[in-house]
Image 1 (tube, rainbow over the protein chains, first blue to last red):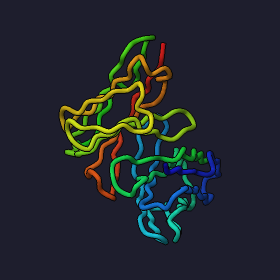
Image 2: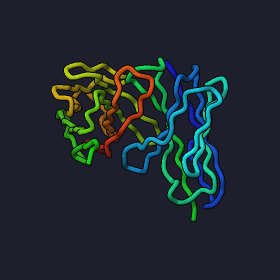
Image 3: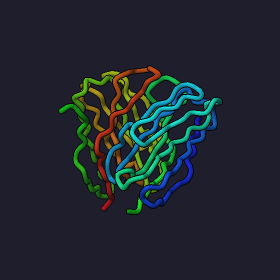
Image 4: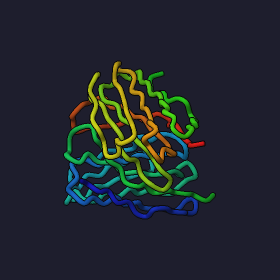
Length: 112
Length: 115
């Protein structure tokens, strides 16, 4: 089965600093999804990447999928307290279907 | 407003008791899911359903049961066979079935604890 490994497990940054979260797959990714979760709440969809080398941005968050489609990174520029939460990557093992699997998540704390 | 509603927010289970978690969506989505989240761990797939009256086991289905009698509803029963039920349970839905663009919409979760 496909394993998604995220690093780091947790991250504490000072407000205004940049940071990067990584998601590595044991198999080729057909699509990689990034979600954000506030503590004790559901997940909110951020971005989806499908093509090798693809990069997408939304406000101060940029996600990339490497050319080999086995690793994705999520980069936050000039972090703010509102960025705090748990970031999870998800993928469909076969590329299609309804059985999405997730990594363990990265817990981000932003100190004011 | 369209969305997914999970209830209750907090639930307590006694030994040997079955409990049912509710999940309702008004997004007209075909697919629905149940995930379990333990502290420090990611989401693990319990069951998913692509269509009414049909559902598939995920990675940790033992001790759980589901039904999909209506498109809008996908309740999860945690049975007494589930020996470690304490966890945060998340329900989700998505528009497509079997597609390659599976953006999931999540409910706000139910925290289940054992008394």
